[in-house]
Length: 359
Image (cartoon, rainbow, N blue to C red):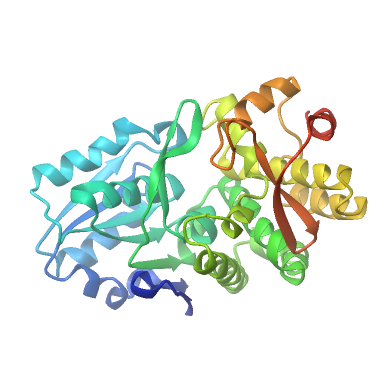
């Protein structure tokens, strides 16, 4: 087992990463002992992984309810969120209760948001079961839901008490979902660690084959990178925005296509290529960096071009973004492989990038 510590003073927590961890009851039970527990999962994961968690916690919890959400990004909204609140209110959950999220990023974001606002905040634990959630959304305390006009625009910062990552859950993950998770793995190397980027690029075959050792190493390094950024900028006042490399374009694609048509990682894959193309046009990096990143994204099984929309459509969608200032989007750009920055961009190079990078 590998362990990563997220150091945030009284909000600090451990990330446990390894094979067979869902069978390690001692990692979860102490947090649930004597408490009312809500295990939040979705219709895809409930029988695969959530049942094991419920069995382990039911023995020590004062009471336990299981909330099964409809699966998919299209359901990441108020209707599904209220299913969590309904269950907790009906069971008379108090401020000492615990929420345990078992599933992918959608489940983790919604369960975390419910925990953040239920009676103004209760504890929660992340048990991510997709690669994307394991390397990204389960770490850092961002929680929330989508709005038809913008992705993750309604939410709160609420750090988990613990993150338990069992790489064995990835054995049941559909190939498309695994590729979506690789987008965030590639992202971490691109923005913060060029050597790690090259390791991932050279080790894609083992990751795609779901080799437990390769997965554990990659997930641990991605978590280390994200933890380091979050520790320095918990609430995205500056540095943390670099974690959104590819996301300004990617969120526009998700919103414009309709949530769920493109997986988040697929949109980020194309978005990273677009952001890197824009970096080249602004003279920040050489074209060979763009070529290397595009090749790696493609070999991961991800799209390298966005939908063929007019530039104005993209700009309109990107104006509803958490990094936008008074409706003007800001972009995470590469200064070199392994280093990134955030800035506003003039329309001309942005329009050229959109023309070059849309299918």
